Length: 303
Image (cartoon, rainbow, N blue to C red):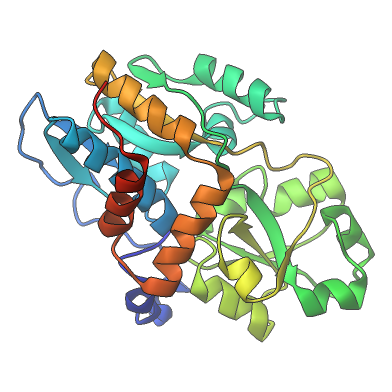
């Protein structure tokens, strides 16, 4: 989603509302140090995902591994080809959305079913490590005023809204299964679309509060939902799949590194994720610092 910091991002409002940030070369990755023993850890351009990636990276370094951080790469269309090509060795993903990327026609919706299918759908050379109980679930989100005015609790209720609805999200969402076409096909809800390139961040929240859009895709672990009294609508027909944090790993990770990452996943909970995200929002601290603090609390030692 977004980061260096939220305040830095706010300075790019004019560009971010209308254009997808791009890279000047063919690959979003830096060249790196070329060391075949170095584990390359990547992350989305989303502050919460960056924190998790930093947890992996810090823990691996503490265990004696050389790590190359390639963080804030972008969205799946940018980084998954790099994972599949072996340019990235470890990446925190979200079970449902990445399954739907690899298998758009999947019928899996519940956590265990999604995880099982994801293990099968992952391309050769990538291993799906243990999923965490921690979730960062995509959700259709509206303002409290909009929900109260139309008596809305679920996505299904949007069919009763008689005024135009515009959905705001990253540009790639327009053509994803949970974009406007999915809303129409699954719920009979017609929605326009406005690209806002901060993955449910402050630009999106501002557009919601200003009435420029009526609905946005925002992750449920984002503290801005509570802070701004927003309402995540119940997805009664499962348009969004279960979304548990799940690491994707290359063969570069040996048994010790794999065990360490799996232990991190086991220790992380939904409450953990919200707490880590809140620290990023309220304290404006770097992801590396938040990650180091959490690891110190967990006392992860190499197995």
